[in-house]
Image (tube, rainbow over all chains, first blue to last red; front, side):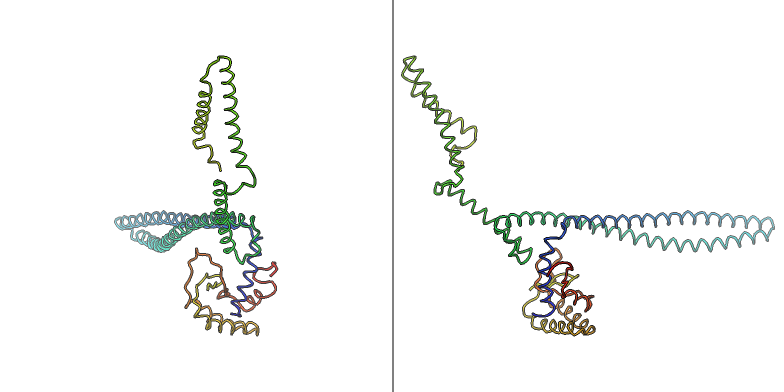
Length: 265
Length: 95
């Protein structure tokens, strides 16, 4: 491919990589977009409420006109009964004008009702979309945060970011690197534990040496004490007691830490 | 290979279609360079239609790097020229 497709692809990748470094946090963009959607939803809902209010107002007007119309019909009937045909005619002609208004209002009412139903449906659909967007947004944000952290780990260890062709690859490599490092750390732990490898930091050895020193030191003091007591009392079972004492101390330590003394490596 | 149609989404294309699409793509580039707007629009429409026809659309939640990118159906010759020009797709960033 050497046409538009290939050239656009190349330019896009080069630009996108640079843009990604400078772009604002996509999580903020997502939140902003969600906010805008909520505002839109609010507008649609307000629209539904406005239409519903207009419809109710029309219904009230219709009731009023129909009441007046009934009243005029009644008046016309009474006027006729009293022999006042002129009055009856007047009442009926007024009623006819009212009927025309009623008919107009009924048409408007139907239109408004249709609008209201459409808007209600639109609001429901929009609500569903906004809800779906919120879920997706949170998923994307979580994924982005995780990817960002993983990328940072990878980059921190080897500065590989400059070689990356694209973000997907960057994340992939960062993940591989992390897994590799984890595996390596695990292997080093095992080697240290087995004694095949000296800990360059000397930390683990120091811990154990200190613990051993502490125990043996403690035992020496006990032994010394017992020896002195034995000397004073002139008894002979002191040595045995001292050894048992040391063993008890060791057992107590194990109970305290919940594990054997040598598992630190 | 994954192709993005700007503003529409991504499609997956089998390699067997490339010879045919490549011809249309080269034609499009020639028309772009000659400034043949009607020809450009016609070829772009044909190319997009063919890509949509033979490609398998990728779901919106799948984000794969696109190897090839096509302008959207509404793109004009001038817009595409600008995209391929010095300013590139994202103005203000060095290419």
